[in-house]
Image (cartoon, rainbow over all chains, first blue to last red; front, side, top):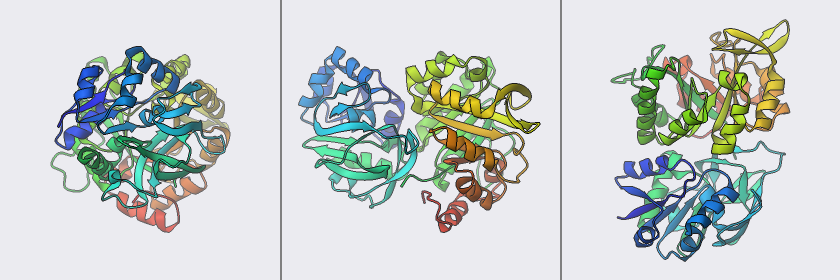
Amino acid sequence: MNIKIVNYGAGNIKSIQFAFQRLGYNAELSSDSDKIIAADKVIFPGVGEASSAMKKLKESGLDTLIPNLKQPVLGICLGMQLMCNHSEEGNTNGLGIFNVNVKRFSNKVKVPQMGWNTISNLKSDLFKGIQEEEYMYLVHSYYAEMCDEAIATSLYEMNYASALEKDNFFGVQFHPEKSSKAGEQILKNFLKI
Amino acid sequence: MLTKRIIPCLDIKNGRTVKGVNFVDLRDAGDPVVLAKQYAELGADELVFLDIAATLENRKTMHKMVLQVAEQVNIPFTVGGGISSVEDVDALLHCGADKVSINSSAVKRPDLINELSDKFGSQCIVVAIDAKQVEGEWLVHLAGGTIPTKINLFDWAIEVEQRGAGEILFTSMDHDGTKAGFANQALAKLSDIVNIPIIASGGAGTIQHFSDTFIEGKADAALAASVFHFGEIPIAELKKELKQQEIPVRI
């Protein structure tokens, strides 16, 4: 299977590559439009700050490429947030794939949320074999609001969308590559979509 | 609900675990990668690797170890020890570390915290603080707690948060090694004055100590070494007991 990880200079991509390696797949980093278009599956990672990440995407033209991809695309963490309409982080517009905005947690809770939280209200093939209230590893200060495209929700300060799906696009706020066996199952599921 | 984290800490020297590790049937208890995998299986939520030699020659060995851990372990891990520049952090994150922990270098040059969080994001910058009480005041200490400074623990905690730390790892030198419980009063105060997660370290001896540090100490995570390495507190048993006490943990 031809798996490409979108490389636009954001974040710790190695962990994702290693996670696929543990599953027996070779996932290649690429910033090349043709190679990304030709892939069977595309992973859109991201750790860091939203507005500077958007800037990098625009510089490389990936901002127009990604929303037009036809194969399954999985955004992880900031990758998922960038697929939304708008983020409060650096007050930037996103790729507008998911019709939802990204906001900052208030200071009523510790920010960032760091650690293992549960995912609930699961509704997607992405979560085949995953039980309600399964634990996932999350590190984030911004969250996607509850919306129709939510396929998983988590509770931190309020219920928010911890995974999203629209057509061939999937996004997860948590890090499946760092979420033990359950996380690896989600990556496996994605490869089967 | 966000759960409280249990974090075993491994001291590393020349790519090997030190202080001895003596639990379960490991073929090579000195191999940090084997040990890390074992801990992940046993239910540890995160791992910390501390390079206690942290010499220049040692650095390459450390990078190799980090790469192997990232390759084989499916839970997050932090690397600390001898990190003093953007380049150091870049190399470790590149090898697959999820977070790095800085300590003395941040006290010596606080701007380092800003530089790191600007470049890599707060989420991967842990500031470790070693402190002990001197005439009733909590003072920050350097070099593994051996060199006292005049810096107040709580003032420093507020400063590191403002400069962009994503998390604080607080070790009480008064409690470390005593197995008499964590420094819960100081920990609770830290949680009240800053709004980033606090990892409690130093003093773990019994399961109740963990429970106390999560409730009285308001800690978000608890780190320990020997009680885990020597099997005195099996992680599964610890988590089961915490859950019975209605403390949220991942099981």
